[in-house]
Length: 363
Ligand SMILES: *Cc1c(COP(=O)(O)O)cnc(C)c1O
Image (cartoon, rainbow, N blue to C red; front, side, top):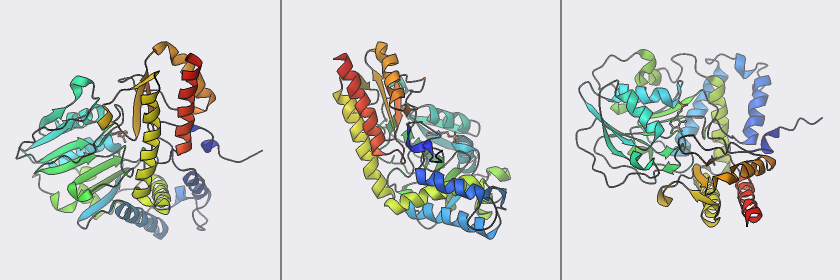
């Protein structure tokens, strides 16, 4: 009987929650049995114990170091997912009587717009909806006088990604749920960044928020405590009981990233994976990508079979190659390969080999 985890044996392309590094799973499982010589499981420890306070501080420090977070910004670990941030970001930044602008690049942007409308005036500045969100809008004019401009850096469902930072005179807010830590970013260009952890950072249950302190407290609105960034900053992410284990696993993932060379390293590796897969999508006459080439996401590659009647055979081949999670989202159809940080290059090669094999059997 072997105790070897099976996590390396499946090529996990899940869009989220998703693959994490195998060594993170190993360490995380040990901490459930006993956390670092304390005689306690991490699951039964007080969040205010010195060990867990130190762990949380380390997680914050790793976020700051990895992304180069400048002075004057706070790093928070909250709950409620990116979905709560859709509302919370607007609640904390949209002034009473003010107006916010949104770039609409898909399902998640839409959800953010819907929540912000509960709070105030919202203007959609640009949208790629008319082409089923297969590109990133460019060349749009951002009106003056907005309280903030919001964009979604990576569109997990439609497979597009921003490779530029929108220009605005107002505050800039970004939902980076599905590409944070996949590449270097300029935090100073942004006033608020949020991300559900379960795409590139850790397990579901914790949400990362990076916020510029000086932009808060200006809405002239009474904000409930749990939805007030300033309350969480003051409480150092422990205003209420934080999701300790999810923060711990995120911390381990950041340690893994740092040890290997940080975002500069992962940026290269993610490019390598994207080049490998998109290269095959473009070369193989059986397949077609669904997103405009210049806007293709490096995290989520969306593609279709030109002849849908080959779907069952392709799926059977994927199953026997132990590739999981490749089914496309219902709003795009076809396939979606999510190549988050922890997915090895070898897994992409296995997928490419299956695509080649399908071509061979059909040729
Ligand atoms: C997954 C995802 C969300 C939703 O995150 P939750 O943590 O489930 O609320 C929001 N935005 C983007 C870009 C996502 O990929």
